[in-house]
Image: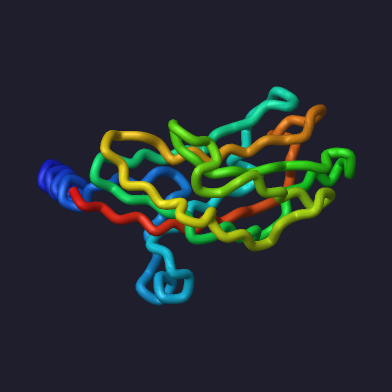
Length: 166
């Protein structure tokens, strides 16, 4: 029974193509219509584990050749913050790939003590069809004297349109 289940799971992954990374999920039919996207990448403060100050952390997922990617929008569900201090006043997020680190979304403030941006659309004409395997990189950068692991609140959703022509 276990062997048969493992074979079926393997077939499903092979047929469906992209294996979902932590945080990246396909949207339901109604969500697709509402958001104009096919997938959402969600991350929370607890996903940000970088302990060095002034050091960015990249959250990534893989894309393969013959896949097209576009950022539809980024929504800040809850502003990022460190409740111990209001001096931790900046957390910036950008979305890119191995070629251009902000190809899809330029630097966006998400900290409650900064001027947080609750909704931002992807860059105009910021879609890309990949000819080789790459990663989509969501880079989160804190202000100079704090570490991302110090954040104790925050959640962001980034909506993608992903097409797989393999």
